Image (cartoon, rainbow, N blue to C red; front, side):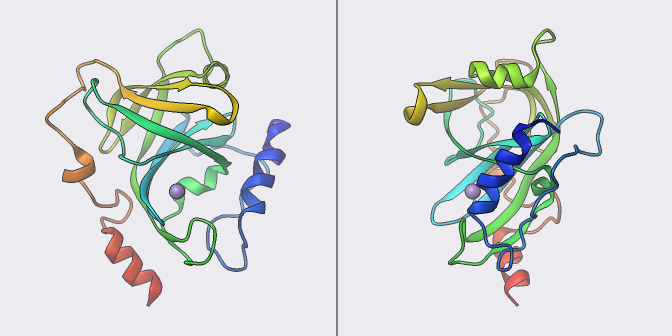
Length: 198
Ligand code: MN
């Protein structure tokens, strides 16, 4: 799609040995099957359990690792560590990455859906560059407005994921604990690991 797509595939592909991992190699371009951009949150039981939060922006998945996962409470800011861009096909990936490979461990599609920008006059790509993204998520577990805000610069850049204070905010609900299974297969991490390893 854009000139940037080859660069993102380069970093993504360099980190991985596709003879060993079943993660997608990734197409050079293209976009999802839905008219709206997609998001996915992958629960990833690697050396540290975390939630990979990915938003479709400009034909690829901009990605952050969120150690605690998303919150529905607008008062809770969740640290989101930027990671390399992933190809769109990654949103379909659920399975086991071999232990000695990059990101080794079990990956579950914890939530998935589509996104709408909140600011009509801004593209998501512009918001990403500015370090302030606002999206309306329409997922199975998460719904409503979320803001991703960058603080700091360069290598010290950190992002925060914050639930916006709308009618979908709910400080009592915590799907990270109460809804631990895959929205794709209904499986737990253990079940995915067992199936894929056997
Ligand atoms: Mn990860």
